[in-house]
Each structure stands twice: as C-alpha cells, then as structure tokens.
Length: 228
Image (cartoon, rainbow, N blue to C red; front, side, top):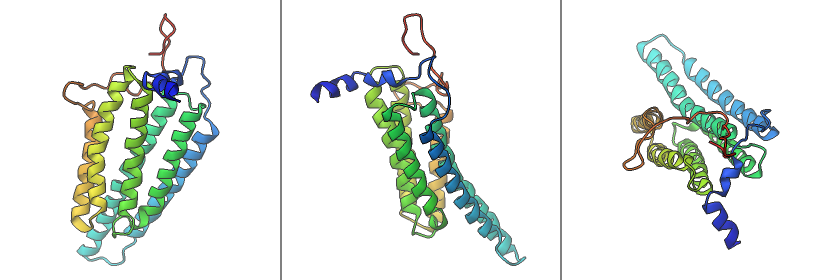
C-alpha cells in the first residue's frame, strides 16, 4: 500500500494522459454527466422563466424580471465552468480509466445537487448546498489531479487553478450563507474570480502564470514516447 502511494505521489497518474492512439468516442459515463447537466440546465431555465413571468406592468415589475434574469445568468456561470473543467479533464486524460470515471461521476453528482438547489438558491434554502457542491467538486478533483500527476508540467497549472478556484469558492460559500443583495454581490465576485483568474492564466507568485496548452484536447507524443 505504501509503495502504491509513493508511485502515485511521483506522478503515476501521468499514465492516465490520453495517448495519440486513444479512442475519441464519448464514454457512457461522459454521456451520463451530460444528461445530468441537461437536467440542471432545465431546472435553471424553468426557474428563470418563472421569474420572467412576474405579472404587472409597473417599473418595479420590470425590475423584478431583469433581476430574475440576472440571477439565472449568475447560476449559469458555475454550471458552465463545471462542464468546462469536466470536458477538459475527460479530453486531457483517458476517460475510460477508473480514476477518470470516478471523477466524472462525482462531478455528475455535484451537478445534480446544484440543479436541485437552483429554485431555492436565493431564498436561503438552497444557496449553501449549491455553493458547497460546486466548490468541493471543483477544488477537490483538481487537488487529486495535483497529487497524482506529480512532477509533470501540468502539476503547476493545476496548483495555480486550484488556488484560484478555492478563492472563488470562498466567495461562493460566503454567499450561500447569506441572502438578499449581499449574496448577489458575493456571487458576482465569485464569478469574476473564477473566470477572471482563468483569463489571466491563474497567476501566482513563484508559480507564474500562463494558459499555454491549457485547453489542448489531447496530448501529443514526443519522439521519446512521453506525453506532452
């Protein structure tokens, strides 16, 4: 057991990287994740439509409709980011391996919780569960990949991304603990951190920044036979 832990800590997970000859078809686990994501988006759209159907023609009614649309877009951002990171991981690593399948199933479970929390995300009942599911999934799985990838160059990228996702996650969780305008402000800040840090290449002191090859869909094989 100790020997296995040592192998993984030294980068045994590099073997999970896609090879040029790896199959490109989606797995059943990936399709299941997409199905759960469709469920969550359906819940989000249904909630947004309900907000847009506020009766009345007074200025306050129009304001309520626009506020509902804003809340819908605010909840769409973490769902989109969850899908993006999941798509990246299943494209960068072999999704047919047990480790990637478990990671994808955990992500699907997190999206399921987020989807069921959508209708009550802003009334104090579902905000915390939405924020916790999103943050624990995003930060937790990248921490695992930091561990298993070892000294591979991708490790530095994942460390930087994990730190910034944790910072954004703090805003998500704090927002989930509040309601009203404070919650909206905190979650807007969380979206800015999540997407802004990614746009800047997740900069960190001593670890640098950069997005080179971040979204590369499949690794290439160097002449020495190693993945890049």
